[in-house]
Amino acid sequence: MPKQENDILKTHLKGIVQNLPELPGSYQFWNADKEIIYVGKAKNLRRRVASYFHKEVDRFKTKVLVGKIADITYTVVNTEEDALHLENALIKKYQPKYNVLLKDGKTYPSICVTNEPFPRIFHTRTINKRAGIYFGPYSHIGAMYAILELIKKVQKPRTCRFPLTEEGIKQGKYKQCLEFHLGNCDAPCVGKQSKENYQERIAQAKEILKGNTREVLQKIFDEMGEKAEELRFEEAEQLKRKYLLVESFCSKSEVVSHTINNVDVFSITGDKLSKNAFVNYLHVANGTVNQSFTFEYKRKLDESDEDLLLLAVTEIRERFGSNAKEIIVPFHLDWQLENVIFTVPQRGDKRHLLELSEMNGKQYRFDRLKQAEKLNPEQRQTRLMKELQNALSLEKLPMHIECFDNSNISGTDAVAGCVVFRSLKPSKKEYRKYNIKTVIGPDDYASMKEVVYRRYHRMKEENTPLPDLIITDGGRGQMEMVRQVVEDELKLQIPIAGLAKDNRHRTNELLFGFPPQVIGMKADSELFRILTQIQDEVHRYAITFHRDKRSKHALHSELDDIKGIGPASKDLLIKKLKSVKQIKSTDIQTLTDIIGPAKAQLVYNYFHEKEQLSEDYS
Image (cartoon, rainbow, N blue to C red; front, side, top):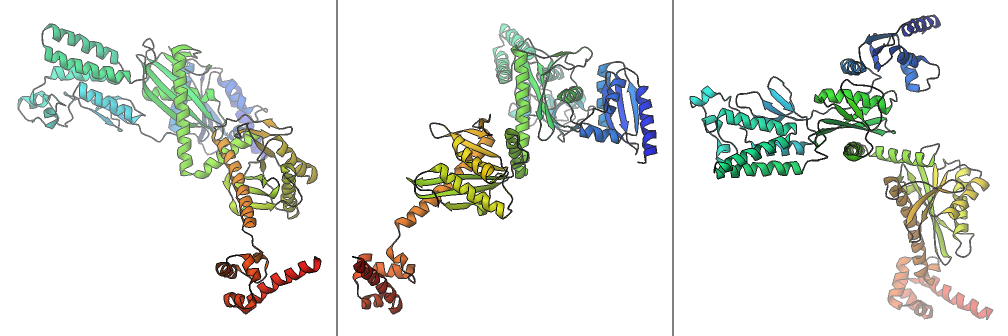
C-alpha cells in the first residue's frame, strides 16, 4: 500500500477509535475486501479496541490482524451478557478468519418425545422441533441407550409407527404387535391401555430424561403403597419392579450431592503445542450429572483461557438451552451474566464436580491426541521431540540423537557402540561399532573418551552434520568425559544428557547441564520410556558386538591363520582327522587325498615350517 494511502487509512481508523463509546458492546474488524475478519466483545468498547493499536503489542498474530484492518464497526448493548451473546451470534453468522474456531463436526444424537396423541420415544440425530420435544444431545452413546432401555422397561412406550388416534382405535384400525406379547407394550393401539394412563407414563419418562429421577421414584413408591392398601398386590409387585429398575439406574449415575441442583460446570484444558483448548461442560440436576460434553477450540490469536471459556460458556449454554443460575468455573471471570453466579470452589462437592469436569476434558484431549497420532504417526514423534526440547531448553528440535555405551569383561575384548536415532526412530544403517585401541584394562571413562573423540573428530573433518543431542549410558562421570572431548578438545557445541541408574540398576533420572542437574520428568512418562528405549538399544548393540567378538576368539583355530585354506577345506580336515594335533602329524599324501595337492602343501608347509622355527630358537 502506498504511504499516502496508508496514512489516510491510519487517520480514518484513529478517528473511529477515538469516537467509540465507553459502553459494553461488540466490535467488528473489516478488511479491504469488505469482509469481517474479526468479531470481539468488550465491557468498554473504546478501551478494548484502542488496545489493538498500542505500539507495545508484541504478539505477531495480533500485528498481522491489525495490518489487515480497513474499517471498524460496532454495536452497543445494555449489558455485558448481551455483549457475549451478540459476539457469539456474529461469529456463527460470519465465521471470521481470525476468531476462535470451534472444531466440532459431530452431530450428537438426542432423544425425541413426539407430540402425537400417543407419543413415541426414540433417538435421532435430526432435530425438528415441530415433531416433538428433544432431550440431549448425548455425547456418550452408551448412556443414551441405557436411559432408553430403562424407559422401555419401566414406562413401556410404543415402538410402532402407526398414526394412532382415539377414533382409529375405536374403529379397530390397528392390531396388537409382537411387542405386546413380549410384554414390552400394553397395546394402546387396541384399547388395552387408556390414553390417560399412557400419557401419564410418558410424563414420567420425560422426568427421567430431565434427570428428575427422585420425583419419579417417589411417585412410583406412593402408587405402590396405594395399591398395597387396596390389596391389589399383583399391581403393587409390578410397581415394585419398576421402582427397583429406576433405583438401580440412579445408583450407576455420578451422584455428587442431592443439595446441588441445576448447576453448570465448565473447565478448560490447554494444549500449548497445537494451540488447541478443550472445554468440558457438565450439567447437574438433582445432584446427578446428566450431561457431559467436551468441545475443542482452535486459538487464532493466542487467546487467553479466560477469553475462550467466556465464549464457550455463552455458546454451550445456548446450544443446550441451559437456564442454570450457578456456573462453576476453575478461575474468576471478569464478566457478569444476568441472574447467574460464577463460583470458583475450593473444597467440597462443588470442587469435586470441577475436578470431574477437568478429568473429562483431559481424557478427551488425550483421546483426540492418540487418534490423531494413529492417523499420522509422525505427529507423535514431533510432540515427544518438542517435549524433550522444552524439558532440556534446547535451541533446536532434537531430530538427530546419538547414544554411546561400552562393553568388556575385565578389560578383555573391549568394544563400544554408537546408535543413531532420527525423529526418535532408530537409524540402523548409521550405527557404528568400535574396537577399543588405546585403553588397557577395564577403564570405562577412558574408553568413552576414545570412542567419542574418534566419532566426532572424523565427523568434524568430513564436515558431517553433528547430532542435536548426545545421550550417555551413565551418570555424571560419563557426561563429564564426553564434555571434555566435545567441548574442550574438539571445540564443538553439542548438548549432552545422561541417563543415570539407581542402586537396583534401574534407570530413574535424566541429567542435563554442567554441572549436571536432574530434569524433573516422571519415570513412567511416555518421553522417559522413549529415552530408556534408546539406552536399552545402545546397550543391546554394544553387548551383541562384544559377544560376537568373544565367540570369534573362542572358536579360533590355527587353521584360520593359514592363507589359502577356507572354511570348506578346514571342515574337511577336521571331519577326517578330528583335531589340529592330528593334522600336524599327518603326512603329505594323506592331506592330498583329503583336500588336494595344492592346499595340502600349504597346510604341510605351515606346520612343518613352524616346527623348524621352534627348533632353531630352542
